Image (cartoon, rainbow, N blue to C red):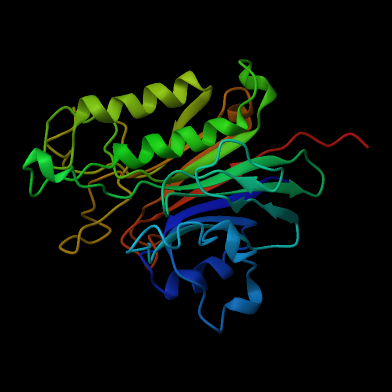
Length: 290
């Protein structure tokens, strides 16, 4: 039986928690999350707070994040071992993850009943403003955060052979894959470096790509006409039917990725109660030797 993982930016809202609890999924990789509402809390397991907010930054930062990536256990078909955040240290213990960006990543080990375990990471590329010395007042870039996430993920990669790793990473990267036109928050050349680094680490790009989701019609002007992007985000002026931008993506270790299927739940009927739609990820695990 596959392990069902849902990746979702829930925009600090309560209703997505209720929709998650009703999905019969196993694990959720959330972004922009706050703790679940009281009526949902007994039905989900958010693990120890230290896996998403260990307060390692206290005394050093004035404005901690108020929206977090989280790994949440949704069923008893899996066990979850959360990695507590240890800050930007050089060597982490077995139950830790060294994080270099506040509110950008949460990680855990997922252990299905009858399949080998794998590492999951919920990724949230927060917008970063350029330094005041640049004189830029409006530009923000997400690749700054994403490269920190990739550096933190690389600690789980101890061999040049991707086949030795079982990693699934998904979330909101705030970039537009394949964009060809520069905009204030879209820098195609910089965004491509994200995909290049993931590939260099043996993390295969899974999309989702069409037909794993509905394509935008019309195609956004910053994308080529033959794009396979599927919209996963809608602005306040858009509805699920008119959503046009893909910001959410999934990656898995090369080799392991062949057992992972991803689609965007971006139809009008299944979009859900957030400005982002859900990514539905099925991990088909080989049977564990006993």
